[in-house]
Length: 202
Image 1 (tube, rainbow, N blue to C red):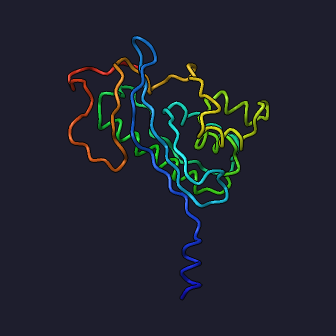
Image 2: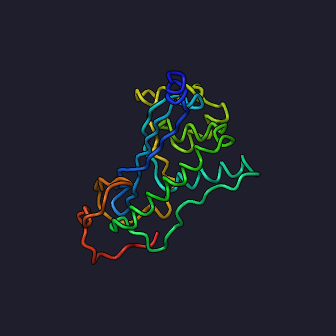
Image 3: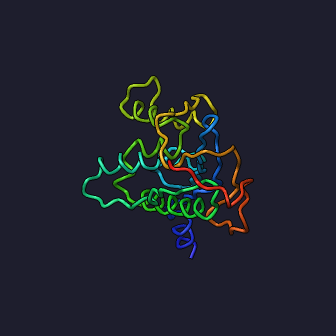
């Protein structure tokens, strides 16, 4: 009985959640929303057993493209589609996208072949921008992938905002936190915007 319990306790797990969408202001007219990605695992594949980072939709698009290039024989899960009329003010749309992003990551981290890609680990466990991740993964930085992941928790490597990536997660509005998670029921929009406001094209 004890051996059975020991075996159960040592079972590998990878738990990942996407939550807490937050609106950030890029400039006077444009904002974007990012999401907190929290990872909890006992897998030897990951440098840190618990971590939280923030990523925006366009960074997920970049990640999927990278994984697709590196794993040609694997059919990758889809991301929630870009919506022409996507509005950061629409809580239902934001929550639906958040669920889709979590489903994407859950599928990715449970595909062993994809876990060999250092860009995935930097995406999930470092504060590096997309540009910095690409350079680091190529070995062209003064720090290694492991060091980047380790230092991100202590703020030794500051994140540089990647202004080049701004697609359907951008629009015109003001800065606000949404305070939602995948498991949070929607009880009216917590955003300080009227539903009558029309979303802008992005």
